[in-house]
Amino acid sequence: EAGVAQSPRYKIIEKRQSVAFWCNPISGHATLYWYQQILGQGPKLLIQFQNNGVVDDSQLPKDRFSAERLKGVDSTLKIQPAKLEDSAVYLCASSLSSSGANVLTFGAGSRLTVL
Amino acid sequence: AQSVTQLDSHVSVSEGTPVLLRCNYSSSYSPSLFWYVQHPNKGLQLLLKYTSAATLVKGINGFEAEFKKSETSFHLTKPSAHMSDAAEYFCVVSVGNTPLVFGKGTRLSVIA
Image (cartoon, rainbow over all chains, first blue to last red; front, side, top):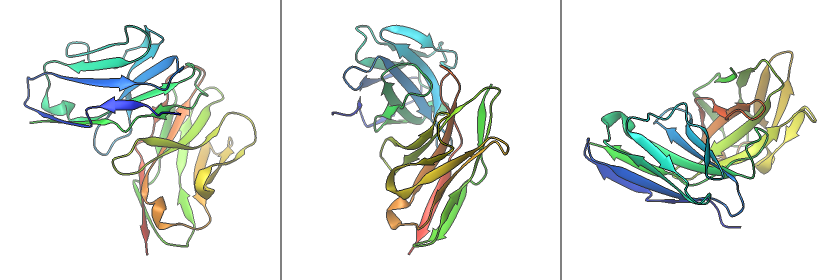
């Protein structure tokens, strides 16, 4: 089966600019996650979707980050305006359901550098 | 809230020697526990998971982990390291439908 697709793989922007990342999960996976992984740290959940609804966005900096999954399939994560501390790898993952015992399949990630 | 602590940020072993990556967890309820591996510029890949069945869990590439409730530990082991095992390893905990909580990671280096 095809894996989780993410684009772009790399992005370099100036602070205060905007950026968008795209994710296409595994076909049939109802749950989609965006994680932020800062260098030297473990991934941190930003937002979790179940189909096209938001399950958890408690750690999403809503003043600058937004995400949508309008048709319950692919998703976009946007940052506007970007700050230096947003430099990180943004990981998208999907799973069949939101059960904690479910295995997440991760994409290769989108590496953001903010100058 | 649940959490995991990976006791070593970096472990270095010689090829052919055993690997031990240590993880302690904290959870008020029966947890699901996972080990994920991340090779450079690649996505996270599941090594193994524990979900209240057998306490000794076997994963891919010869890795295994033992759930020890009395010690709140879930250490990852492999009898003989291979050069291709060099990567970042993450211990992960989840309870019910709560989001996965990742440890800070352990970087494994394998010396020829």
